[in-house]
Length: 480
Image 1 (tube, helix red, strand yellow):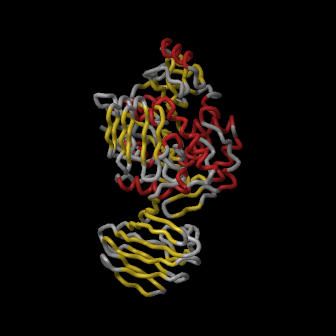
Image 2 (image 1 turned 90 degrees about the vertical axis):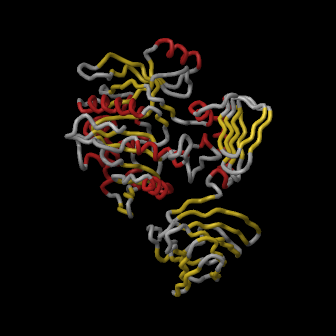
Image 3 (image 1 turned 135 degrees about the vertical axis):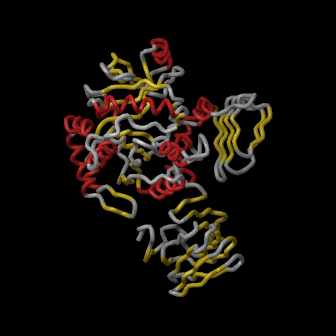
C-alpha cells in the first residue's frame, strides 16, 4: 500500500539516480544496459521497482537523472509500468552524486523550494515497502525542520562492503529520527563485528531526504562553485523531446564527489532515520544469492539450469542450458555470449574482468548481442568477412530514422508483422515472407504500421559494417 506524505501542503519529490554501470554484475549488466534496467530481483526491472515505491498520494511525479546513452531505456521502462516522470535530466558526464543532487534540488526548487527531495539510487532492493514509507514519513518531518536526513539500515551481519553511521542522540520532537554522530568508512571484518555488537551503528544506505532550500544552503556554504556550475548547467539546458540536456561546460565545473563526502560528513544538519526494510544494494552476484529464495540444497536457480551435487550456489542462465556437477558456494551466470564462473565470496572481483574487456575493447564489456533502441531492438545472429546478419524488432507504431549508408547494402526479409519500407521516396508494404533490397547509398526507412511487433532478418554486406555508418536525414527521436 502506498502511504500518503505527512504534510499535504508540500509534496515529496522523488529523485531517481540512474547513472551507474553495475560492472560487478557482469555478464548481465553492461555499460549500455546496466543493472538498474534488468529484472534481477523480481518481475520489474530495478528502476521500475524504485519508481513504483514512490507513486501515489503525497508524491510528485518522479524526477530521473541519467546519462545520454540510457535515456530511451529509462523513458521506455517507466512508460511500460504506466509512470510518467516529472522530468528526465541528462548528465553530460558522470560526476558522482553531489552534483546530481544539486541539480535535482535546483530543479525541484523551480517549482517548490520547500518541497522535500527524496534522493534514491535506482538499483536497490527494498523488500518491506511499508517500512520504507514509514521511514519516509519520519525523514520528511525532520527535513521540514531543516535537517539533511539519511536512511540508516539496521545491520544484519558484520558487512565490510558498506559504510556505517554512528547514531547520535534522538532529535527532540521528531519521532524515529536521531542525530548523526559520525560517518564511518567501510571497515575490516573485525571492526564490523564490533559495530554489530555495539548496536549503535547503521549501514549507510545511500538514500537521503531534505528540502531543496536546506540542501542548496549547505552546498552554497561548502561548495559554491558546484552550485554555480549546476545552476548554469540547468538554466542553459536544452529541451530534447521528453529530456532536458544539462549544459556540459558548466556541469564540468562541479565537484566530482559523493553527497556523503561533499556534504553529509561536513554539515551540522545531518540526521538519520534508522530502518529495517529488507534493503540490499545488489552490488554483486552474492547479494542476489542472499536475498533470493533457496532450494533445499541452498541453491538459487534461474533459467534453463540443471544441477547435480551442487550446494549453496547461484546458477542463472539467460539463454543456453547450464549444467553443474559437484559445485559448492559458486556463482555461474550465462548469457548468450558470455559465461561467468566464480566462488561466491569472490564474485565482486568480476570488476577486474570488466576492466580487461574494456582495455581490450571487446564488445562483451560494453553491450549485449541484443541492443536496444528507442524504436525497438536488434540482435546479432552471425558475422563474417564483409557480412553480418541481424534480427530487428520494431515496436508497433515506431519507425527508424530516414537514413543511408556509405559502405553497406542491406537485404530485409519480413518474418513477423507488416513493414512499411521507404526507398528513394517510394513507400511499399511488406508482409511475412516478403523481402526487399536496399542498395548502398540509397535513402531508406523502416516502419511498423501495425499493432503487433515487426520482426525482420537483415543481411548487411559491404567493406565496413559499423553502426556509425549511418547518415540520418530525419529522426523521430532527435538523433539527426
